[in-house]
Image (cartoon, rainbow, N blue to C red; front, side, top):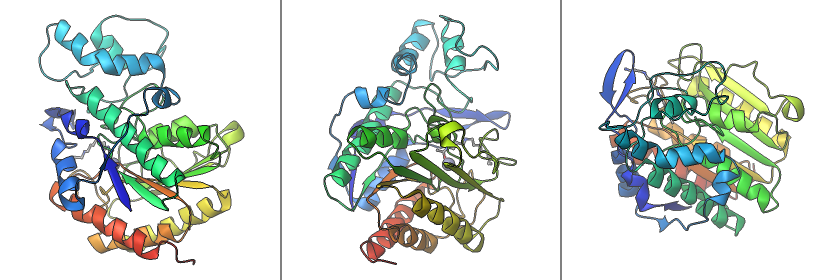
Length: 342
Ligand code: SP5
Ligand code: ZN
């Protein structure tokens, strides 16, 4: 399958993140993007579909904040990356606070999603990559890959978190709907639960969100991704969470993937969006599953047997030296089974 990206995606380069009570080097580094381009080749450039498809998902006030936050940070006399340290649990948007720290807290869910000088350019470029890859699929390609970076699945309509600023999968889903493809399945195979994507489509019965991830009882993002979260209102039953324990290898993963694929088939979508994270890899530095490289080929092949037009959107994966090969294995597995009916 063809792949798409925007050179601006390299411009997001925060220095460090806060967790477990201390600072560590920012795991979602520009080196990830370079590794993907090294392994897969340069691919094709994203086209610019403008801000409108982004605002079909994200609150305009949140998008404006993302755009200006680093400038406000510098104007407040700060150095380095903009980061929050107070997070409201009540009245999240009831107050229009001017101070940069108050804005960051109101628009975020964690302290490991810093805003650097190039963050907006990279997030915007990544969203355009997803829209360009979607356009390839709607134009007749059976599948396309968007090398989004930063990732997207942790951010909601009006909050950032988990290294994510714009929800690329959600933006593509809404853009597809605007072009008449109403029924969509989003399959999220990143190690972490895609809480932002779940939030955006929680009440929506047209968009199935099915996710396989580390049990939030032990892993980020903790407050979402439990098996009893199944959607609400019109979306009741259109959210499927399949949490798995730390240490899960392919023998534990494959049955969950079968369950998720059954749910996708039952939903009867006209488009599949895969939120693909390679942080399920055994050697991932921040995660605790035990998948091997060859498992990604099997995974890609199983997903291809759905025989649906597919947009693959890059999410996490922090074993930088192995990332390109892990994504390539997924693509090879997918492409080898694509067009073969089960
Ligand atoms: C897109 C994506 O994969 N985001 C992940 C965000 C995870 N952020 C918090 C990670 C905390 C990991 N702590 C484990 C420490 C290992 N020594
Ligand atoms: Zn992840």
